[in-house]
Amino acid sequence: MGKPATPRRLGDDEAQAVGRSLRVSPRKLDLVAALIRGKGVEAALAELAFCRRRIAGDVRKVLQSAVANAENNHQLDVDRLVVASASVGKALVMKRWNPRARGRMARIRRPFSNITVVVREREERREKA
Image (cartoon, rainbow, N blue to C red):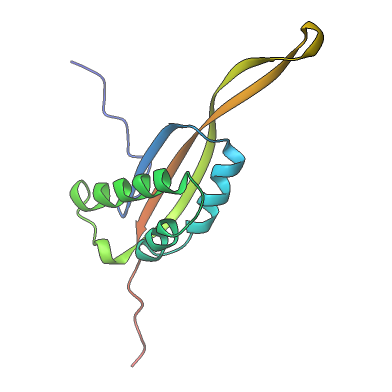
């Protein structure tokens, strides 16, 4: 026997990739994710390649993974893919202490984040004759 298969959360024309435990705060990661939301995959990859933020390289890897999933697992056309959503969430927060004067301590928070990128195949626009 075994467990019954869970239904697919995404549509038939969608694929996703998840990057977990990225060493950046969610607010900073969301700024980079906002650059690619709603854009075509080629434009989004070019935007991330020239983005000066450190985390842009990791977001680019996740986007490339989503494109590879779409092509290999779901047989979608790579040239018609669009970034449907790029959502950011919190992961763990490491708490550290920094010694200060007079025996006191200052707290240091080192947050981690998760990112989920969903790509969707764009429908063809039919022109009226």
